[in-house]
Structure formats: C-alpha cells, structure tokens
Image (cartoon, rainbow over all chains, first blue to last red; front, top):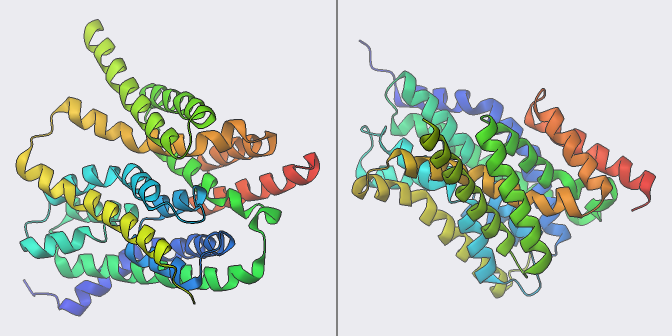
Length: 233
Length: 101
C-alpha cells in the first residue's frame, strides 16, 4: 500500500471540514460585532476568540458582560458552558493511538464542537492521525479568529445590533443546538427542568447562577427519570 | 486597538477554564471508568446548560423573543444552522417593530 504524503493528508482533513469552516465565518462576524457593541476593542475580541476558541461560552460571556469585567463570573460561566468538553475529550481520547502524549494534549486545545464531531466520524472510518486532525482544526481555528476580528472592526460602524435583531443571533444559535440534542422524552424532561430552574434563578439571584441552576436541575431530572425507568423494569 | 488589563484577565481566566474542560476528559479516561449512570449525567449537561442560557431570553424577556425562539426551534427541525438563525433574527426584528418593543 502506498503511503499518502503528509500534505495530502492535511489537505484531506481541510476538505472534510470545508463546509463547517465556511459556516463558522458569519458566526465569527456576529461574535465580533456583538463584542464591539459591548465595548470590547478589536484586539480584545480577537484575543478572546484566539485564546478561548469556544463560541458558545464566548457568546454567553457577551450576554453577562459588565464594566469592569468580572473575571470570576466569566471564568465560572465558561467552565459551566464548556463542561461538555470533558465528555467529548474522554470519548475522542480513546481513539487517538496514533498521537504521542503531548500531541494528544495539543489536539485537545482545539477541541471545538465541530472539530470533535468530524474527528469522531473519521475515527469510525479509519485511523485518526495528527496531520489529518491538524488539517481539520487549524484552518477552522484561523477562520474563527479572523472573522471575529473582521466582525469587531466592522461592528464598531454597524451601531446597535438590537435594531436589526442581531442581538438575538446567539440565543438563536443555542436554540438550534438544543434542538440537535433532542433524543426523545428524556431530553424533554431535562430541558423542562433546566428552563424552570434557570428562569426562577434568573429572577431571584444575581449574576450567572441561573446557568448553574439550570444545569443542575437538568442533570437531576435525567437521574430521576432513569431511576424511575429502572424501578418499572 | 486597546487592551484593558481587567478584560485581559477575564479572557485569560475564561481560556484557562476552557482548557481545563478540554484536557479533563483525557485525565478522566486515565483514572476513572465511566459507567452508564455517569455517562447519562454527562450527556444531560450540554442540553441542560444551553437551555438554561436561553431560558430567560426565550421565556421572560418579551413576546418578540418568545415568538422568535419558537420560530428558530421549528426552523431548526428542517433547515441548517445558519438558515434557522437567520429566520430567528428576522422574526425578532419584525416582531419588535410591530409590537414596538
């Protein structure tokens, strides 16, 4: 069997990711524009995209942004929103025998939802290699950072995003993602418990505790429905 | 192009929290076996967190936001991410203009 060249392998990863790389562009632009409307400079918005590289938590940060920035609340909400990465890295980590120890940890730094999903698909078909993974992750990362910069630079001229409904873009993104997690009635119980707890906490507690309350209620709901099913079985 | 030290601290703290979640899985599979119950709890976290984030906007902000959230959710069952998001943004802008909010 002929060994394919490294550059060909990198290109294959890049091509597999191309539709998602294109799709992330407008989301990066919206993030940059929203960040600019919250008073972040272009440099600050771009740095956040480059260092955090987790769209969901970045949009949540914009939602709870204050002046001066409250680093504790922002770090805590990033931890909560990104806790799903623990399961994702645990899962993909078992499918990386071709990676050296350091390469495995380096790869995890770029573990965005979209990259994780494509890597899981690849691992199901053939051996996941570091070069292919780099082709998947690096261009996607660069587009995310550059589109954030462009959005932040343009956003300063766009004015108030609320006037054209752009402030609703990220709740809309989350709504679509929630729908993607739907797996039947059990998910319904998780979502209902989370929504009720989050709204109550949002009305009565300051800061981002509503995210923790919703997460805890959702997890509690899944454990309760699980126990009930076991009791019936 | 300014960089506020307070904002830099917040960004670095967010990045540290995120890196922690990304490498924690590798540490978990080295030291812990994840049973069905643990897996179930972990799987419930993403939808629960996302729902918690949108719930105040979707339910107690105003009729325009509630309407747009429903429209986005319905669109998401048929259309790709970007199209559904565009519909949500369009609906919220039109509803706000009509309601005057």
